[in-house]
Amino acid sequence: MFQLSGKRIFITGLAGFLGSHIADRCLAEGYRVSGCDNLTGGYLDNVPSGAVFHQIDCNDFALLAALMREVDMSIIVLPQPMRDSPYSVPIWSPATL
Image (cartoon, rainbow, N blue to C red):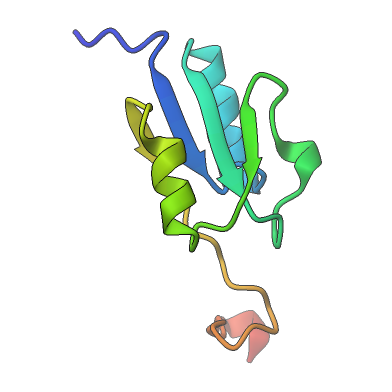
């Protein structure tokens, strides 16, 4: 069995819905949690009180690499594009037709 309690975990999208819930669970399991978010879709209020938060964009590779240097694991939560973003993809369902 793996001993994971006390391990350092880094979560991208920490202030978003998924990232914050993953962080809550990891903290409850005994992980030391840190992570980042650029707050374009997340909210500072979502960040669990036991987590170390860094407001950076994941496109800043040098800073991201420096923050992740001392972690044991990472969870990369990919963002959903904002509705009016040029990168957004329409979701088609019978309800929208």
